[in-house]
Image (cartoon, rainbow, N blue to C red; front, side, top):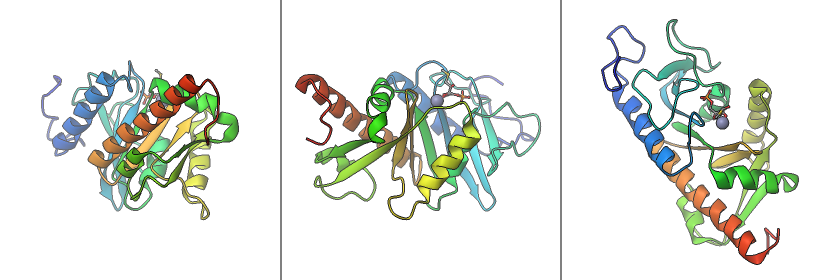
Amino acid sequence: MTATAAPPATSPLAGHEAKIDALRETGHWLWQRGFSLGTSSNYSVVVSRDPLELLITASGKDKGRLTRADFVIVDRDGKATSPGQPKSSAETLLHTVVAELPGVGAVLHTHSVWATVLSDLFFKQGAVEIAGYEMLKGLDGITTHEHTSQIEIFENTQDIPQLAEQVRERLTNSIRPLKHGYLIRKHGMYTWGKDLDEARRHVEIIEFLLECTARRLMLTGGLHPAS
Ligand SMILES: CSC[C@@H](O)[C@@H](O)C(=O)COP(=O)(O)O
Ligand SMILES: [Zn+2]
């Protein structure tokens, strides 16, 4: 298949061309922003709720130059729904665990410089605390700058099933469930939204807020996240 040729009618991807192209365009945009360089990152959208099925990027692809063949349909266990598809993202379970939440339509994973650096710098605190910024209102459900967002940080690991279970526990935590996104130490960020547009907005807003946090630290010369 060429980059833009329609998948064969027998392919599980047939009929999903619009969603595939939206994810390809998203990958190109995130690559241009420097958030998805090389083969880093992975993206998914929900294509069926019951049973849960996701359209997700195949593993190891250059996310700035995705072709229509670089996608897989997976079920809620992260397994391809039919044989003959490419291998799905190594981090597929980090998508399915979030997509299981009602109201989630898209999940985006990025590897920006600021997310990578701050996820290490704030690891001991457990989260990057972001307070008082007007741009917080770009996140779903936040209506005033008088708000504090905790972007939680998980230790990086190659054991994705174990990390997915940790994320599941935090997503469903009744006291302070994860909202909008989280960081993985020295690795990157996961963000989601009710659809791809909202997930893209959340990436852009959180990245802006992380950059503000980092630049403020650089200008003030200290790790004073709450001051
Ligand atoms: C540049 S390697 C990055 C990978 O290890 C991983 O973290 C990643 O984001 C992409 O993995 P992939 O399997 O292509 O979805
Ligand atoms: Zn990654």
